[in-house]
Length: 253
Image 1 (cartoon, rainbow, N blue to C red):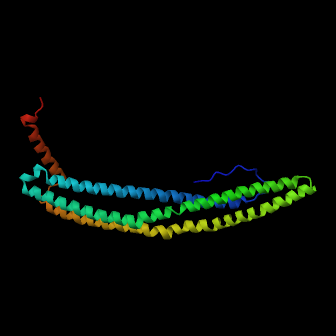
Image 2 (tube, rainbow, N blue to C red; image 1 turned 180 degrees about the vertical axis):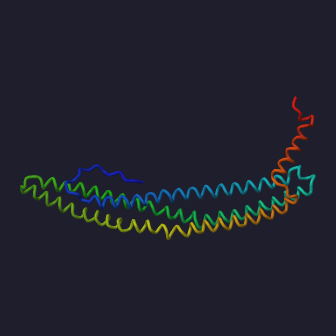
Image 3 (tube, rainbow, N blue to C red; image 1 turned 90 degrees about the vertical axis):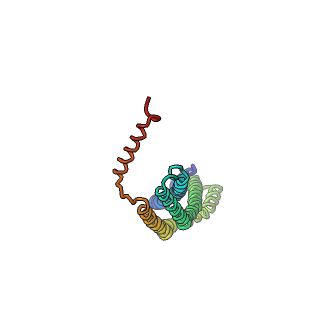
C-alpha cells in the first residue's frame, strides 16, 4: 500500500518540512494498519461462518445417519436417545444459521463496506505524492534558472518557470492540507462505525451459546438417565470390547 516516489532531482529548498512529512507518514501508516486489520477480520469472519455452517450440517448428518444405523433398531431406549440427539442437532443447526445470518448482516457486510472506502483514500494519497514530485521537479527547475547568469533570455525562462510552479505548489498544498485534516478524522471514525458491529457480534455469540446450553442440558436429561460418569462408561466400554475380542471370529491367529 505504500507509494513509490518518482525519481526526480531534489531541490535545494525544502518544499515540505520534515515535521509535516513525519506527521503525514504517521497518520497514513495508522490507516494502512487499520485497512490490513479490517480486511483480515473480514476474511477471518467469513472463514469462521463457513466453518460453523459446515460443522453444524455435519452434526445434523451424523445424527441422521445414526437413526438409520442397524444398531439402533434393536433397542427402543437407545433409538429414543438418538432421536433426541437428532432433534437437538437440528435445533442447533437452526440457531447456528440465525447466528450466521446475524454475523452477515451486522458484521461482515459493514466490514466489507468499510474496506471499500480505503481504495479512494489510497488514491488520494497517491495523487498527493504525484503532486509533491511535480512540485519538487518544478522547484528544481526554478533553482537552476536562478543559478544561471541573469541574461534577458534566462530571466524570461525563470519567470516562466515560477509561473509554472505556482499552480502546482498550490495544488500540492491543498491536497496535503486536506489529507492532514481528514486522515485523523477518518481514523477516529472507526470507533463510531465498527463498535456497533463488534457489539452485535458479541450479542449474537451470547444468544447462540445460551441456546446451546439449553439444548444440550435438555438432551443430557433425556439420554443420561443412568447418570454414569465418563470413567464408568469408559470401563464399561472396555469390558464389552474385551468380550468382543474373546470371540473366535476376531481372535488373533
